[in-house]
Image (cartoon, helix red, strand yellow):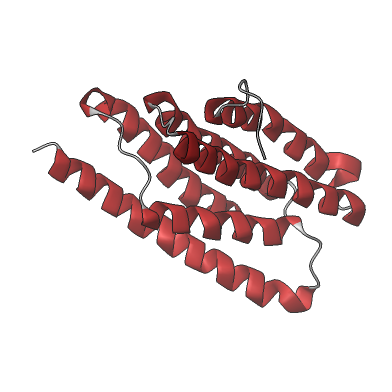
Length: 181
């Protein structure tokens, strides 16, 4: 499908940033415990996650990968996941410690990226993409109104996301340190 020229990968990323509050709004709608709004919220966040895939595919297909895009895309991802996790924790549907562990890593890496940006942006690697996938699905399972009998699955999925989050954070710092020498 041929997209209009103004729809660039960075346009999609900025649109994702602007639409994250819609996801938060739907999470809190009717007190946050209305199954209909939980499904709507899941759809909003799912659409935002798909837009992350779309902007990357579009950038590669048009050969329009930019430094701004390499920086903004992970910022948009962190804003999306952070907004969902903080909202879920406020609603009491996700433990705060999970939100804190993941956001400390994500914010820490973002600050680290800003500190080393003079040497060039380090693009996301395969481990980071796998981590993001597990985070997105893990958080998605907390957004959905799951039966308590499925909490073990949701929590196991999130445990893998937490492990990947910590491991890839160490790997990212280590990789950037090696590249600076």
